[in-house]
Length: 185
Image 1 (tube, rainbow, N blue to C red):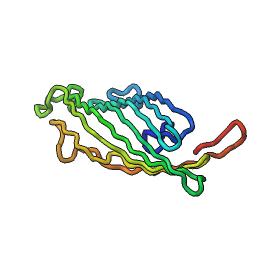
Image 2: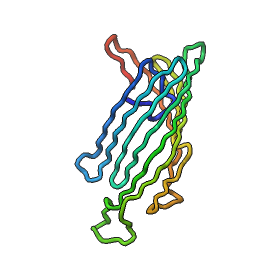
Image 3: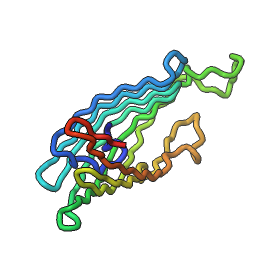
Image 4: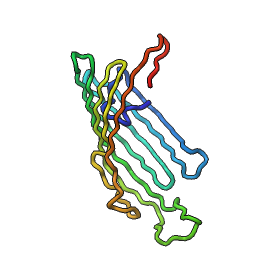
């Protein structure tokens, strides 16, 4: 429902402004179950520019990630205006929190290596995306975690605890079933 969270090049590709408010609770009833909240806004600025932003909160057990993201996209016509090519870049800042008090050792045995308290760190990030689309088709490639920033929390391994670059390929087609229904796999 919110493609611009995955690919910054999607920002501003709609002919209307979009606002998304999303809340997700996974594994409801289990202690420390993942929860996510997201608020995002994107708009087309003129014929070539897309602007957007989002605020999010993601919590899983003792680890939480809260942050904000700003997005800029630029569109170009391709193949005699049959398609549009959008290039997008987003910058974000995350606050990672590790709450040692929420960690329960196996069999509740005291472990002196577990530090107490709450650790927090701010981490920058960036993402890049390419998006080719027309009215009934789209194809996108996005690369989050361009910077591969380290999450420097004292209780975690400094060498292996960093954001790892990923690659997302997305595509879709709108099948017009009739004047009231469109199937969008």
